[in-house]
Image (cartoon, rainbow, N blue to C red; front, top):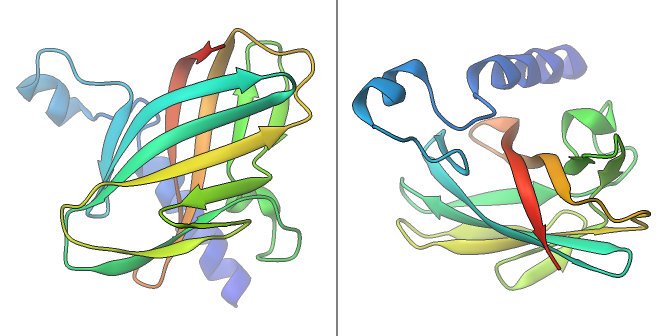
Length: 167
């Protein structure tokens, strides 16, 4: 039963959250929507940058809670946390056709495979996703997919596209 609910929730998120971080309504109101930010479920997600050093890539995302204080968990690779790792795990797809899962995430002052932090209202908090074993190093990240979990919303993801790597 839990697995069915989880899968339905994930599908709803996949359908409801535009990867480009804007909808038709925002496109009408804004002349140039920012493809590297998205507001979803009362959180504002703003992509900062992805850096590469040797065979590692680190990507920074600023997260601002627009509602009352609440806890949010970011999710890196861990088998067995939920039914299927692709439904919750943060990952990247590069311009060479490769897929890599985040190995660790630093979220606020905590770092682990599933750090969680209490987000205060309107206080930006940085999350750094760390990927390793990248070979060869790409020029572009086609998609950065960041997985989250909250008690209020369950599992959900946000996406950022067409990211140039800083070396």
